[in-house]
Image 1: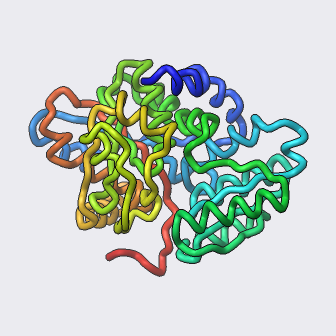
Image 2: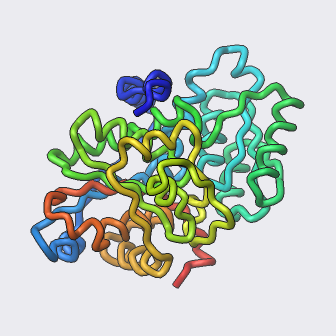
Image 3: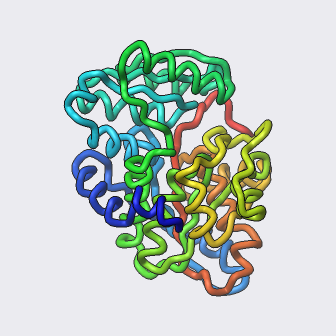
Length: 323
């Protein structure tokens, strides 16, 4: 980990975030499934443990980072409100966090965002500002809203308080399922995997990032030793179509053991299988992590016997199921 990033966010920031989130975020369960354990035990006996952030407020881990970030604002900043750009889960999370702090929120959302997520943002009392489905359009629209309102911009992942908040999911899981050898989390912009890496390194647990093959900037960047942004990402995992940020890249580079990619076909199969076997609804981004847990890249390592998987969310448009 580079010195500059280490100064920005530390393991102790994750612990402090967990204290702020106490009584605000749900203490989500960590579950297991005998059928999935059997499927994973091809080489050696294994146990899989799933941290159910699909049961978190707004249906995703994003509430943790958003609430922690808003909690760090000054009174003057709170009066002006907050703004962000997001395709879904961070949008809902910031809208709810702002509502709990009784401050206004403007959420810039691409017109391609799932209706279930857009409606949830409106339901939490935030103002949705539409934009074209490109990163440039999202950023320019957010800049315009910020200049017009004076709101504080809360980045979906490239924010130290957001990273610290996201790390609390892994922090809880290691106490719910002791003795983990490995934690797998999905990677898009990198907020969750960065916070997870902080916890993993402190407790001596390996970290693997799970990524769709159609949006594989983290895997390509790690192989090249430098950030290689996405160009034309294409995956069913809509929450993982964002490139790594300058704060999150060093965590992937230095403290993620491996980035494993999976095809959308594997994600869809596992998503349906997980619904059937555990009765838990998970979205494609979460299913990517489960697919990686069952992949040859993970199962070929006999050292990883107790494996934690962070189920990042459960916001699914039931009118557009992939099967």
